[in-house]
Image 1 (cartoon, rainbow, N blue to C red):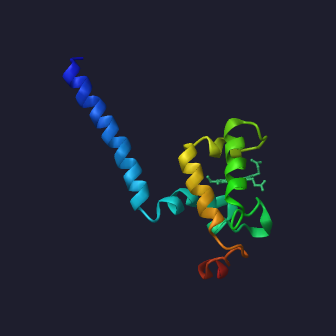
Image 2: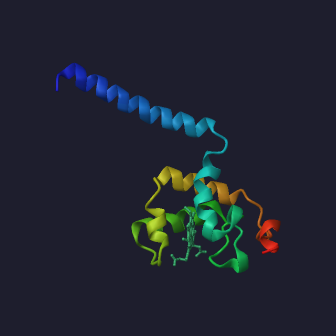
Image 3: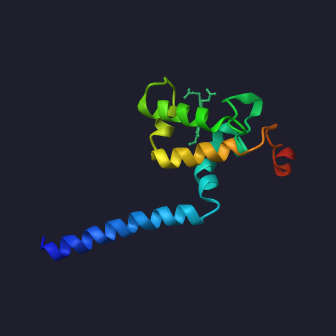
Length: 118
Ligand code: HEC
């Protein structure tokens, strides 16, 4: 590859990385969008039914982040959380931990009314 092409390629990569950072900083739903992948098991906004798996809402940010980093590195044994944690960058895990820490603890939301009349 010619030096000019390499320079253009590098600039494109740097611009891309910069754009992702700016997008994250400007998108108020960024952290919730990431965290929503956890809702399936940990309940909407991290309030799980019967605390299984453990609720994440209102937990300490640093404690949540430490658990996630330990799942990611394999330091903390898990059945599936190590796979989940590996899907995110450290910065994304920080955003996710921050999101759940900012939610008020509470009971899991009631099932949608549509489900009641089966
Ligand atoms: C498929 C279901 C599932 C999904 C999706 C999931 N988790 Fe988990 N989570 C679990 C289970 C089950 C455990 C118990 C540890 C294990 O066996 O892996 C757990 C444990 C945890 C714990 C430890 C809680 C404690 O007090 O010990 C944290 C923190 C956590 N998950 C965060 C997350 C985050 C953040 C996400 C989204 C990125 C997520 N989980 C997505 C099922 C899930």
